[in-house]
Length: 111
Image (cartoon, rainbow, N blue to C red):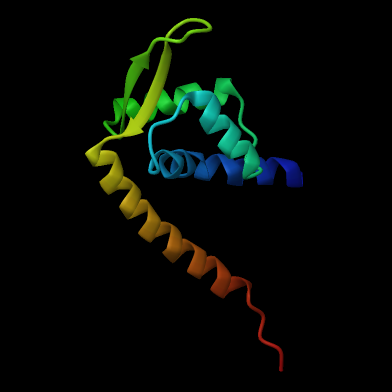
C-alpha cells in the first residue's frame, strides 16, 4: 500500500470543507484560496480548485462577482452564500464529531 496515495485521498476528502472555511472569513480570488491551502500544507493546483468551486457554486453554497483588474482580465471573487454558511456550520459539527471519533480509536490503553 502506498502511503502517499492514502495521504492524497485524505486531503481530497477535506478540500471542500477547507475551501468553505477559507471563504467564511470573506470573499477570495482563487489564487488566494490556493495560497491559503498551500500554507496549510494542502497543496492544490488550479486544475483541482476550479472544478470544486464550480460544484460548490452549482450547489448554491458559493456565489461570485467579477472585478476589473488593472493588470489583466477581470477577476472572479468567490464568497459564501447564506446556504453555504449554514452548510459550513453543519460541517464544523461533523468535523468535531469525526475528529473525536478518530482520536478515541487511536488511543491505546496500556495495562
